Amino acid sequence: MRELALNILDIAENSVSAGATLIEIEVRADFEKDEMSITIGDDGCGMDEEMLQRVTDPFTTTRTTRKVGMGLPLFKYSAESAGGSFQIRSEKGKGTQVCATYRISHVDRMPLGDYGGVVLQLVTMNPQVNFRFIAGDGERSGTLDTRELREVLGEDIPLNSVEVRAFLKEYIQENLVDIFGGRL
Ligand SMILES: Nc1ncnc2c1ncn2[C@@H]1O[C@H](COP(=O)(O)OP(=O)(O)OP(=O)(O)O)[C@@H](O)[C@H]1O
Ligand SMILES: [Mg+2]
Image (cartoon, rainbow, N blue to C red; front, side, top):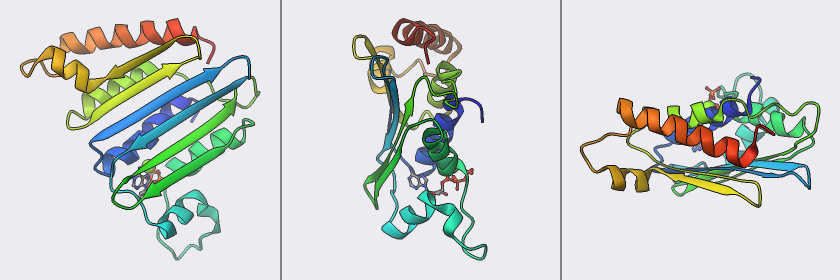
């Protein structure tokens, strides 16, 4: 994976699989401190303590134990190999929050990539889920909340209609350029 946006998609898909009704994704950058963070939180089924240990440290498990996927380990690796850190918190029945930080200028930090495309994909592919996207650099920030969008659009116009998709694509892209200006 060469784009952080694809990592975000992967982690958000875990949240969808966990039956989340609300997924919040926040991308923050502090260019003075040379730090950025990606936080993904959900209100899905969560994990118990034992599962949490396994998903964060899959390489310590033996081959006979349950198969552990690559989404979380790759996300963790993306941060730890770029001067950052990784954290996951989860509570059974309550939800999960995953946070990765990065040193922006680190040679091994992957570019954010097509985050706008990922946002659009998540929103249009998961009509049953509410999303709240936040992006900010300390000075500027933008929020996209599908609950607010649905309220404005009414029941007759779905978020995945051609017109709304086209609007969203432009809106998200413009906001991301405004806030991060291609610096991530
Ligand atoms: N947000 C979440 N809520 C509840 N359980 C989760 C969440 N994220 C991950 N998990 C659990 O942790 C496991 C490992 O997640 P991970 O993304 O690393 O791999 P995977 O989803 O199983 O497979 P892959 O992502 O490689 O297709 C998941 O199968 C799931 O059981
Ligand atoms: Mg996964």
